[in-house]
Figure 1: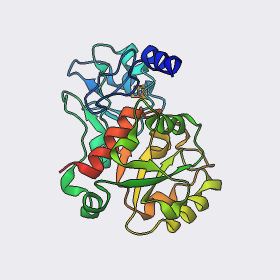
Figure 2 (figure 1 turned 120 degrees about the vertical axis):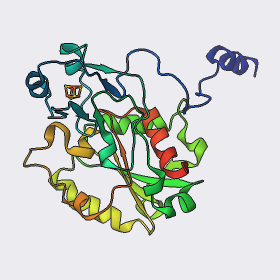
Figure 3 (figure 1 turned 180 degrees about the vertical axis):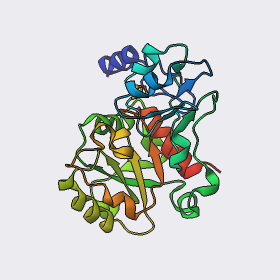
Length: 249
Ligand code: SF4
């Protein structure tokens, strides 16, 4: 008993008391900010590997950005990355960061389906589908469940069967061989149900967007309820995104 207490004392407090306000330590690229400084826009747009940057005025699409940091390294006066991990929204357009603006990316409570607040506001069970993912976003989803981030404290859990779930969480660019599997899984979830896309690959296809090996037709058939950007998405982005979707009024 004494030995166990010594171990507990030695380990200290492991959980994050409030994942909605904690600051991320160390290096982390969160929401970018684009200044109004004039630069060679053509060069800036062309350097992005996923065509996330547009010109006139300059903008960055977080749904396409891999957070590689190359634009900030080559154009440090134009682009910088904050540590803001709250980057999720229910509206795809809100993922586009515009030049001269320094506003948080948010869920728009007015356009969230009413069923989501009423039914999933206190309890949400999700089935994760890795659709050609590289296991990075999958690991971060796992981390969101660990003792530090502890998403289950909010009644949000991942379940093994779609029949026990309230929605699906998709990671990966959606490869052809997973297209049917996603449909089968989604059909098995009882109504009402939600769709959450986690990570750049799931939101836009990422670096695989033009690959003939992907089939994203599933996403053309349904409304996506939440986009959580990141490459991979940070557990704090995941926790806060899901909380905002289900509880923000
Ligand atoms: S950080 Fe994003 S916007 Fe900048 S070059 Fe990389 S992918 Fe493109």
